[in-house]
Structure formats: structure tokens, C-alpha cells
Length: 222
Image 1 (cartoon, rainbow, N blue to C red):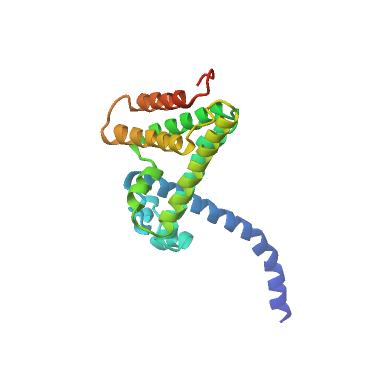
Image 2 (cartoon, rainbow, N blue to C red):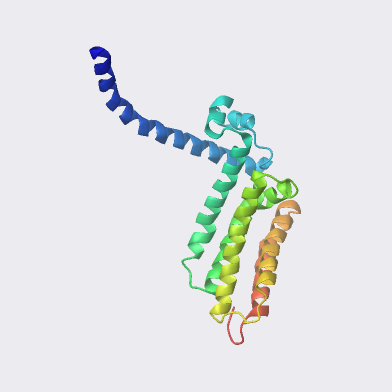
């Protein structure tokens, strides 16, 4: 009894010390798997993701990948969340450092335009995901809708702020402007990625400037 108690007491500090390391390693492994899954999904789509395909891509066993997610659906949702986090870091947060109104709206669109242009060869998860899951209800679709709506709400707030700052007219149709801005990005993705038309990025930017000019407050440059 005494020896067993002693062994347990001696082992306890070692276990306490190794637990955080094991937890950190587990998080690092999961992050690496999600990173690989995001790269894979950009080329084959979210629906193309599977535990088996990811195990092959990462050199891990299926059981090893499964242990971090528990299901293919959870893996797909994790990829959607990771894409959104990166989108937020690259597009939303930097734009928020600009002044309220048109400077911020310009920054949001410019950074969005730049990101989609970079993704022409791989594909935008928001856009490709909408095509894959537009008529497929479930948690993955719900996650995609939530992320896209979050981004659209940010754009809507920026447009309303531009109206509030007197940069855009008081009668600006916020919903219509938001719809048309989003439409420009969809058209860019379609023309550049599918049709391989040169100049799609410039056309999208020109369309954005034309929209702002239409709603610009009298005497305010866009």
C-alpha cells in the first residue's frame, strides 16, 4: 500500500507537467490538419473533403484524423470556420483601421477584391460553398450561411456609416448597394476563374466606383 501510494505521489507531478504539453501538441496537430483540409477544400470543394482523403494528404492514419474531429461534418465545419478567421484577419480587421464612411468601405472592398483575385486559381470557399450547399440543409450549410451573413452585415454597417458621415446620400438604398457590391465580386470570380477573362478585376473596381458615384452626396468625392 505504502509503495503504491508513493509511486502515485511521485507520478502525479510528472503527469501534471506533461498534460499541458500533450494538449498543446494536440492543438498543433489539429491546426495542421485544418490547414491541410482548407488547402484541399480550395481545390476540390468542401463536399470533396473526407477523413480518408485528408489522411492521405497529411500522411496520417484515418483513425488519427478522426480522433481530432469525430466526423466528416465536423471537419467540414472546422474548415469553414478557419476560412472565415483568415478572411477576417486579411480583409476585415485591416479595413477597420481606416476612417469611418467611404475610406472604410473602400478598404473593405479593395481588400476583398485583392483576396478573391488571389484565390482565382484555388477558389473562394464562400462562393464555391454556396454552390455546393445552396440546396442542402444541415450544419455545414448553416455554418457557411452564418459566416457569409456576418461578412455582409459588416459591409452593410460600413455603407450605413458612409451615409451617416454624409459621404453617401441620405436616400441611399443600403440593401441595393450591398447587393450590387456583392454581385461585382461574384461576377469577378465567374469571369476570372471560369471564363478566364483578362481585366475582370479592373471591371469590378470600375463597377464599384460607378456605384459610389451614383449614391455620392452632392459635392463629396468618391
